[in-house]
Amino acid sequence: MTAQSGPLWIASENPTTAGTLAWVKLDTAADYERQATEAVESFKRWRSIPAPARGLVVRAIGDAFRTHKHDLGELVSLEVGKIRSEGQGEIQEIVDIADFAVGLSRQLPGLTLPSERAGHRLIEQWLPLGVVGVISAFNFPAAVWAWNACLAAVAGDVTLWKPSLLAPLTAIACNRIADEVATSMGHPGVFRLIIGTDTEVGESMIADKRLPLISATGSCRMGKRVGAVVAQRLGRSLLELGGNNACIVHKDADLDLTLPAIVFGAVGTAGQRCTTTRRLIIHESIADTFVQRLTKAYQSLESRIGDPLKDGTLIGPLVNAKAVEQFEHAVAQAKAQGAQILAGGSRAERSDIRGHFVRPTLIKAPASNTLPIALEETFAPILYVFTYRELDEAIAMQNSVDQGLSSSVFTESVRVSERFLHPDGSGSDCGIANVNCGTSGAEIGGAFGGEKETGGGRESGSDSWKAYMRRQTCTINFSGKLELAQGIRFE
Ligand code: UN1
Image (cartoon, rainbow, N blue to C red; front, side, top):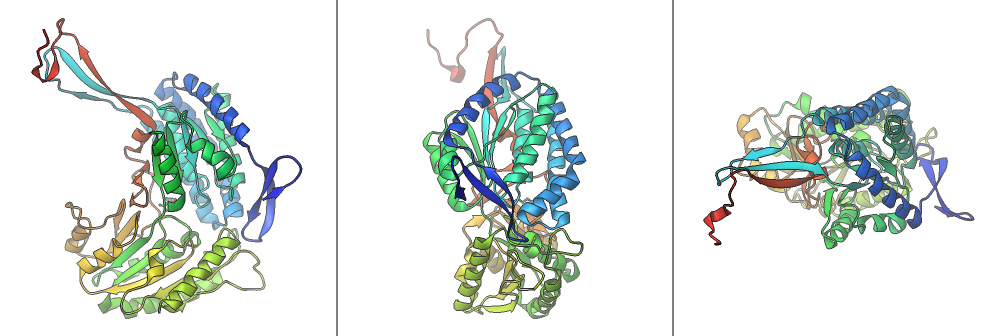
């Protein structure tokens, strides 16, 4: 960040080259104030548009993202270092959630409940909520905004988006597309962007009573601050925070399927997804052979580190120099705590690469299974390996971290899988629990989020839309006389 004369500017860096892509002017607290005031007025107009008509606007936005998928995907690759197919996948996730929201716009349901009083109707209706503040992280610089913005738009809300300062160009491009489509259809101001620091803009936003909902994605530390400030004003927050996700591999697992699932989960997006697989908990009887295969796979990945936009690359850079330092810190801690580095463990140093690259890293925990660093979420491609004897022990290990986002078990046994998903809640304690597929790469159709320090929020599919609306319970008396509930007489 630099203070040139006048406003503050930030550089958007290309993590592949460590060079600057562009300079972006930061918004100030005064800019925030203006945006928030205008947003409230935009909301009053937008909420009066019928939901199916709002859905038509979101449909056109989805089409625009279909049209620009290639270019936007490349921009994501340039700005945060995702490999080409993952950059494209990110924009596909926008198209998917737009489609979902369009369908929803014609079926936002209410409820009719039986009244205890004759001649009365008891219903619930869902109403637009207001201006939604969206705080997003660098690792899904477009899709997570769209999860919020598309649902908010069909719900009748206006979105005020504060993106990560590590990915401002992606945010400018995406918001401009949505805003231009909506404006061309007669609805300016529904999609808003504010690019600023946490202190200048973030703090104003989370303390602002005009924003009934703050939806924030990022670190647990950030979420605790957002949650506390929003709770202080009795606002609503939707938090999607860190994960420390594990795969349990049972002795009867189909290892040919398990291996690529774990490799993608652990090293995909260079280990920078909230859903990245960070811990492998494997049955001791198969641990040696499987870990050998995994080590080989990790070694073969070394030649696939490089420019994310080049064909054949599987591992792009970490987002910045600080992320590389955190990676190195975690590896040093693991060594000091008695773990063994099986693959990787250092920066990727090759004459043809200059940016923030590290080697995919496999670390075996000491025989005691005690490895404090593995309880922390390090946003890097580090997979810690633990072993177990009894399934209950594995489930307890998987649940032993502060976060509760995603989890999975690999098994051919219905008993094992049902134990993991037990309806009494004694299995996985995460918001996402999969069988025979990895911890990352969720579809938009399900609710996305997790428990404990992951924050408890749910975004994207299923009934997550409810967070963006307010519920109203209505009792309508058509009996012609007044009757009180609970049989109360007041004469
Ligand atoms: C995130 O890392 O914040 O399930 C979101 C996944 C993606 C979304 C991840 N669809 O890995």
